Amino acid sequence: RDTRGVKMGAFDGKVALVTGAGGGLGRAYALALAKEGAAVVVNDLGVSRHGEDEGQALAEKVVDEIKALGGKAVADRGSVSSADDAQAMIARAIENFGRLDIVINNAGILRDKTLVRMDEAMWDQVIDVHLKGTFLVTKFAVEAMIKAGQGGRIINTSSYAGLKGNFGQTNYGAAKAGIAGLTRVVALECARYKITCNAIAPVAKTRMTEELDMVPESYAAEDVAPLVMWLASEEAAGVSGRVFGAHGRHYFEY
Ligand code: NAD
Image 1 (cartoon, protein in one colour):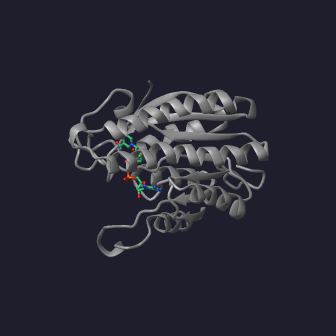
Image 2 (cartoon, helix red, strand yellow):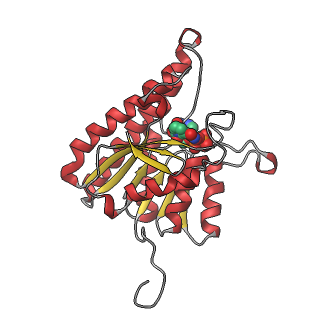
Image 3 (cartoon, protein in one colour):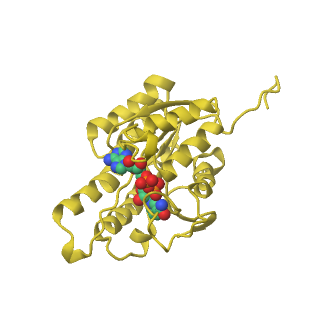
C-alpha cells in the first residue's frame, strides 16, 4: 500500500506485451499481470469460435475483461510471424503506455502429423509462428528495451515436445527446441543491458490440449501464471537463460 493506503500492485508502472493472449495460457498471463498493475498489450490474431462470441476478436475480449477489473490494456491483432506486425506490437506498447518492460512470447499453433505425412506447408506454418515469431518479437522488443535503457524481461514458450520429444510433432518439437536455444543466446547477449531472457515449458488444459488425455483436467492455465509472474519480477533479475517446466503448478528447471 502507498502512503494514502491505496493498494499497490507488484507491476505498477510496468508495461507488458503478451502474444497469443486470447488463448488459454496467454489470457491467464495477461489477466495476472493486469491485476498486479501492469498495462498490457494483448496480442492475438484469433477469432472466437464459440457460441454467442463467435466472430469476436480474441484480443478485444481479453481487453474487455481486463478493463472490467479496472486494469489497463490495449488490443493488437497482428501476427507474430510478420516483421511489420511484430514492430507494430512494440510501437503499440510505447505509443499507448510510454514504455515496454515485459514480453511474453506465447502465441502458438499445432499442425501434427507423423514425419512421412507432414508436408512442407505444415512444417513452415509451425516454424513461422513459434520460432520465427519468437525471433521477430524478441528482436524488436530488445531493440526498444536497449534504447530505453531500463532493462527488461523476455519470457519465451518452449515445450516438453521440444526438450524431450513427442509423437507427430517434428515441426513443433524443432521449433520449441529452437526457442530454448534462442533463449540462451539472447540471455548471453542481453545480460549487459539488464534484460533477462528465460523460457517456460508449460502443461495446462487449454484449447490447444483439450483433446489430449495426457494433460490432466486439473492443470489450469492460471496455475502456470505465477511462474511467469516471478520471471517477470524484480526478484528474478539474476535469473536468465533458463528453461523451467510448469506442469500445472508443479515447477522445475529442465
Ligand atoms: P491456445 O491455442 O489456447 O493459445 C494460443 C493462441 O495463439 C491462440 O489464441 C491463437 O489465436 C494465437 N496465435 C496463433 N498464431 C498466432 C500468430 N501468428 N500471431 C499471434 N497470435 C497467434 O494454446 P495454449 O495452450 O494457451 O498455448 C500457448 C503457448 O503454450 C503456445 O506457444 C503453446 O505451444 C505452448 N504450450 C502449451 C502447452 C499446453 O499444455 N497448453 C504445452 C506446451 C507448450
